[in-house]
Length: 287
Ligand SMILES: Cc1cc2nc3c(=O)[nH]c(=O)nc-3n(C[C@H](O)[C@H](O)[C@H](O)COP(=O)(O)OP(=O)(O)OC[C@H]3O[C@@H](n4cnc5c(N)ncnc54)[C@H](O)[C@@H]3O)c2cc1C
Image (cartoon, rainbow, N blue to C red):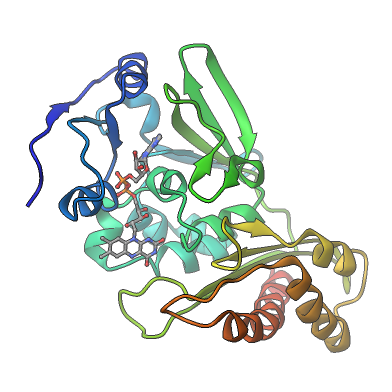
């Protein structure tokens, strides 16, 4: 049963920040918060529901500047948006694999980011698309690259009185492609045992830009920057992709859990690196 709590529903960003600063638990879709409260992990006596804060709402795409997503954008909105499938394939693959339709309809990108779970399905895709987050608080706004937003397990670069306001993602150029592979023990309603995201921009046969992100492979979602450097500026030959699969292992720190041993996660990392890169390259060739 949920414990008793006081509910606040501000329509003003500064009021929401003030309540958070005073210790109220922020809730967006509630698919993480209410599960934790129900299970006794979270005993917040005050809850601030931010769904009516206009600055956190809405989502737009501009072919030059890219995506501007309110923190309240849901996984389902991403999944059903043609623009995403066409230009941000990894995000489609990630968001459409979150929980069930019901969870995706309530769960937000802001909640997925701020919950800080290393397995979050939208994060790797947003990392390879070079997302930046806009954080707002009493002293104004600041924009932080998503790759720098995670400081440690469940620790974010966000002050007690700050809220995640928006997510900005550049427009991918022509001849670019991205892909996300979620490896799970079963097909429905399971968290990622490993998540692998890749983004490739081609100039002829040469990989001009490469970004790789790993989820459930370290205490926080991470970019595999050494592997990206190994691939950048080179032709996508099978031997090189196989080498990338091995280099990724040096950049990851998977742990053993009841879902999987660290050894199995390492074997997956090597294989899924190659598969995600191959898919991203194939899409870049089409685009
Ligand atoms: C049955 C089930 C299955 C699930 N399956 C998956 C899955 O497959 N993949 C996956 O990635 N996740 C999964 N989840 C987890 C969850 O649905 C996602 O993390 C979702 O995106 C959370 O969004 P929310 O809006 O519901 O977050 P909430 O529960 O409202 O909030 C989550 C956290 O973020 C904070 N927060 C929310 N918005 C903001 C903001 N704007 N600024 C600052 N802090 C904020 C809250 O305070 C809280 O700490 C599942 C959950 C359930 C219950």
